[in-house]
Image 1 (cartoon, rainbow, N blue to C red):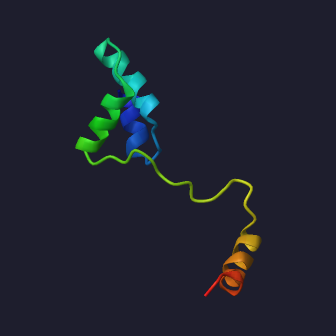
Image 2 (cartoon, rainbow, N blue to C red):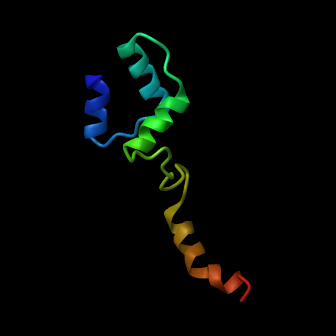
Length: 75
């Protein structure tokens, strides 16, 4: 699992499927996704991370929305 370790140390995000397949290869038997989630929980790993922004988001429109949002919301 050196490739998985290198990816994790560099800050890349890994999915449970990637971890499951790598661990399955190392152990020589199938590993369930539930097992991976339990493993992450025991070692304070995060299961999900939010997307910081949408790929097609226009930053100028987002800033305009932030400035005008309270004008249109109910008090």
